[in-house]
Image (cartoon, rainbow, N blue to C red; front, side):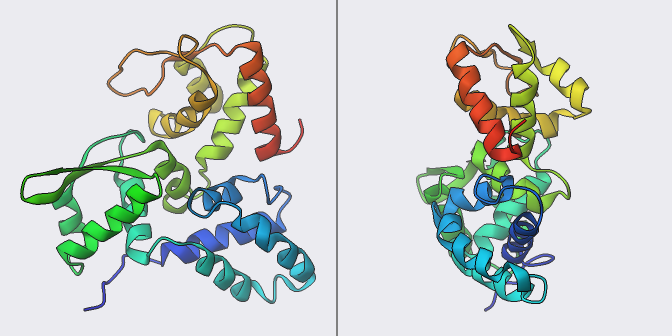
Length: 246
């Protein structure tokens, strides 16, 4: 039986955001929406860029055709995309909160147990989730990886993109010498912890142990960071790639 998916097809939502990035001032190869696609299909944006540029003069009239090309380039199934989007929408903290398999059975009643298991397997294979099973149960729960929010938050929430937010944090860190705390960053940008956590998860991949908070906090993924000179160089390159040169 066909699975009924909630709301608009998330692949087309992602395709529209990639198209918007193409015709905006955001650099398409380094831009935040292109970065989402690269998580699940590395190099595809670069492969399609020449075609897009050749067609850009007719881009508005041919928008749906370009979006169709983008949708076909996303290897995750519709159900896997919908589960990823649902996970982002229902996450209170934007970090690796455990999600019970039973919650997905309730959220997607038209999908069989096996279909949901296979869709979660796709997310795991793409590095977007970690699955946990038990005797007699393939999956009892899963934990979203940080990259899941980078891919699905822009689909789940208008105007929010963790990669772009991470680039903004990187720029903010570069004007400070020394340690910068989570509260300072959230106050600077007017963010709550749900928006802060996915962005900082990206930033901390560029900062080594000992220069980022290692404490386990109930809501904040990382309390402070103090990048080295070499890490500051990486943060600068990252920010320039996503946001364009300062």
